[in-house]
Amino acid sequence: MATLSLRHVQKVYPMRDEDKEEKKKKRKKKGEEEEPKKTFNLKVTDEGVIAVDDFNLEIADKEFIVFVGPSGCGKSTTLRMIAGLEDITRGELYLDGQLINDVDPKDRDMAMVFQNYALYPHMTVRQNLEFPLELRKIPKEEMDQKVEWAAEVLSITPYLDRKPKALSGGQRQRVAIGRAIVRDPRVLLMDEPLSNLDAKLRNQMRAEIIKLRKNLNATFIYVTHDQTEAMTLGDRIVIMRDGDVQQIGTPQEVFDHPRNLFVAGFIGMPQMNFFDGQLVKTDAGTYAVCIGEAQIELSDDKQRNLAERGIAPQRVVVGARPEHITLEDKPGSMIEGVIDVTEMMGSSVHLHINVDGKDCIIIVPRLELGSAGIESGTTVRFTLAPNTVHVFDPDTEQNLECL
Image 1 (cartoon, rainbow, N blue to C red):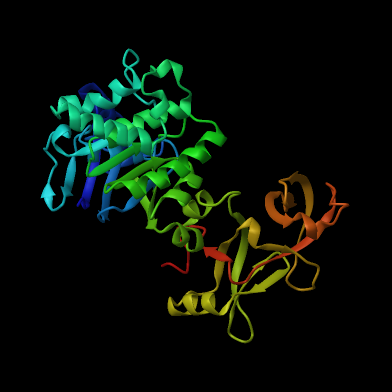
Image 2 (image 1 turned 45 degrees about the vertical axis):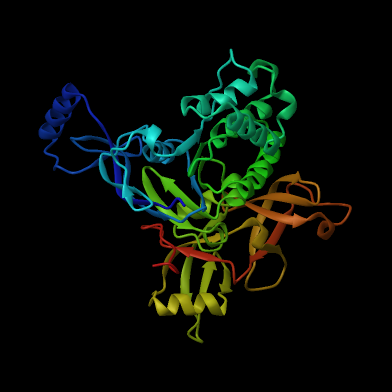
């Protein structure tokens, strides 16, 4: 069993004394108040740079959690705090109810897979797999059984007598995973393990990790900047930005109900389209969004969500995913634009449409366009699906349905 609890976890990287004094002088000269400032999208106080701020998460036994976000958002720092490779500045980390802030990494019964494989080049694959077991003084017979099991699970049995330089990138990553799982850890930590692989190998390794999970009794915590990996692997996703948690939920929850503009734009490929618009009340008392001359009445579910929160008519940012936009030519609810670029994607075509100077992407099944297709420079009209439109406050960037 391996449950994890992170409560108000914070990581601050201290500033040098000379940097602190210089910062104080500059602030005193400008008459600034003593409050956190943002530098390079991270909060800076007199104490230092806040890399992770007030992180709270309860992880169930055998759950697969994915930390996802852009580079520098704090996801790897959080993973390293869980592993014990980084000290926790404030907050508590519990493993099965036991506080482990000050427990050495080797005593946490966790294993970590690094981005750069971190294999010993002078050792064979077998020796790399045996190394963590030798440190634990596992008997030779038991060691052989564990190595053979890990090699079979990861399909690397034919390579046991090779050295890492004789392996491909995907094979090396399998060996790195094998070295982590061979000692049957309670928690398996993975820090962007597929980022060095090409697209085809990443797809294969994602499938391997899904299969691997069925053979282990471990809790998985996985870090990536690739939202496709997050959506396909995770039971729940933790979306981070600038050291803060933006949203925690299942892949479907964060896709269907993004809490803010950042999550809406980060999750989904191609990303969500955004339009400047107005949320209005119709003569019948229902909600609709207006984009230019087009007016789109929202679905019953969205009417209810907005009404329950007492949302007043206001200026909004309207979000719509490319697959939820339809080419039509009906009066009243049409948005007009000019096709800039068409991208053939096999069974579908991605249309890049210029709408009032902004790029809007629409995914259209190729069969709907016919054999002639559609040319750049063509003026088209389209509408948004009323049940999938999202409305955001342009100032707070929050989804008005999630307030």
